[in-house]
Image (cartoon, rainbow, N blue to C red; front, side):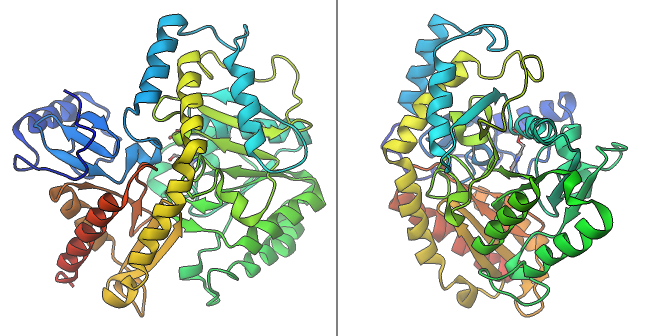
Length: 449
Ligand SMILES: Cc1ncc(COP(=O)(O)O)c(C=O)c1O
């Protein structure tokens, strides 16, 4: 049975995990790939808005949104209707070989959301990692160069090309052998941990210096570099925003050397930060943009959006069987309507509301080192000691687990940060509940040090 729309906050009716959840978790351990990283035993059955019901009838408030995917909430009626209607009409055709109307329709609309005078072209795929794979190929194709530069802490996916750019956790690379050659990583401007003591506005000058005076002079001549890929706000790495000047300078360097500036907005895009794309805060114009996650409210869709003069590869150069499937596109069009129809504005409003509530958390709690992000992409860094910034990974994990037992679903990000990435439709009552619950959990965690 669907969750009533007026239900806004959790209701727990069993100990967690409940009896049915326990059985499913056990079967999962027996039959599923053990490579997944489940933090707690949530076994989901229904979702509606920001609420998720588990198999035992427990209701949770979802501040994880399926890893920042369910932008319009779970099963938004307009998205469900679009999926149902489209699946009764045409489920698959393959845009690689045939035409259908929603492909150019959505491509035109998405292209118009990206800054820059030049028209954009779009390649649809099925996921974030595929968007990044395609972006690597496109950057190489467009520049006829093969080197790539990426950032420590960034996550770009798990297939071999994107994994070569990912530098988030060594477990994600360990035992997989040689990856793509010609990739160098440089530090990400992580203001809270800035080696030179810079703040969120100025951190990263020395990184750009390293790029221009070390990497370009000693490793890769810039004329060999196809692309520099960056998450404007690091996602898996801990919800860390790059300073505005840093992104602007990166753009200048890319332009100067004919390097493709690739923004990976798989997690930070589609309105989550209170603007359609996080890079808009810096006023930059990426040559290539990768999107996925929130783009279709949970249906598998990714997109590479590029300047038309960049995406000029020849027929056969890149393709896909399922990418841009009509049902996923229908969900994406309904999603875009909802985002532009008010949810992006709500993400900004509710983000401001939560940031106002958490403004004093570094004073109020001795284990909160930093609260950062934009809109509803909010990271809270947990430390054992505010002065030394010793990472509190165990405390963060305890908070995530305690929140689950109080009916609030959140995830960690990076080594020791909490990530808040709720659906963009949350209201004040839900934000209040989440913040109250987190305060309780943080207070309890503080007793552990
Ligand atoms: C910034 C970023 N890029 C790429 C990916 C990979 O996306 P997917 O898991 O859909 O392959 C992710 C996933 O978390 C991501 O956060």
